[in-house]
Image (cartoon, rainbow, N blue to C red):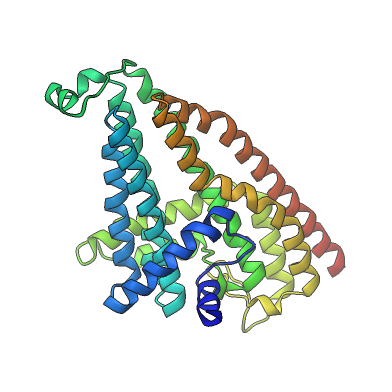
Length: 335
């Protein structure tokens, strides 16, 4: 049992960044799936692809205004997320981490929610649903018209910004906690260089994913100017010729950072991790499920544009303030 618990803990990113529901539900289940797939020789990327199909299947179920079909969709979404947990846990347990795996893992959640948003919009436009399907599943049509697509587009844009920056801040936290080996922190210039070396004719799928991923990392950096300035000071004052952080590399081992910086950053960043977690999956899934079970799925879009948007703005402001404070402290210590 002790060995099993040690393996489970080794499969986690960090207790600093894990959410209560993940620690006590998704990670234990994901660990069992990871061990099962390991015995079968299934790779983490294959698990991720399976989770994409499960998530899209959940979206299809949310197309129908039926409690039974909705419950099936919620089950599929939970199942998809256990696989989303299992792929990363398997990668950490077996050392099968890859750049493609990181990109696929990020894309999987996007594909789930694109299908869910589209399904909800069509569900609220009954004229778009074939009559034989509404009769078969016992749907009760609701009428919003194309207005729901506008609301969904705004919510989807807000969702993408929130998840993007929450992921970035968690990986920065892990970088200062564990170094590059324990983080998936990426740099836009490095991703651009990787993209330039790819050939669409030889690797079309990888090239497409890399194109969007380089834009994803560029967006993270563009929305965090104080954080980028902070990193520039870290590179300038705490890198050496062998391990210097360059524009293409965040490879500075955590143990080469001064202890005061690691302690101060963790102290300021740790309280923000709960907001990062709220802006990722679990809170969204709960809000989505409740709105669907209430028969008012549009409420989820409103939740995105009010509660989650407010938390996102607070998170960005707080993280930028932390980085500005630490950058000034580095500069003062260097003088």
